[in-house]
Length: 68
Image 1 (cartoon, rainbow, N blue to C red):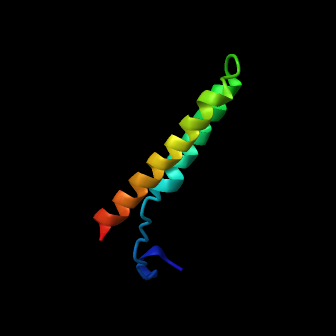
Image 2 (cartoon, rainbow, N blue to C red):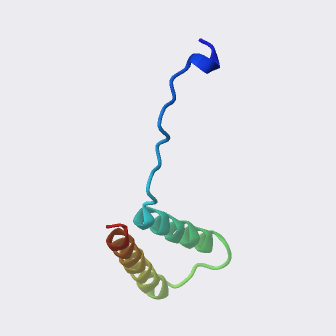
């Protein structure tokens, strides 16, 4: 089949999933932190994890509200 005779397909665009993106970056950052240098204190890292997940949820809710 020649390229000129192929029918055009509409381009599919995906919306950014901010919750997944920010949570993934948070866990990658925490993993890098644990792999490099001395182990961080769990008493400090637990609130950072919970706060980061809360921030990601807040951004995801704002993005969903703005899209509508």
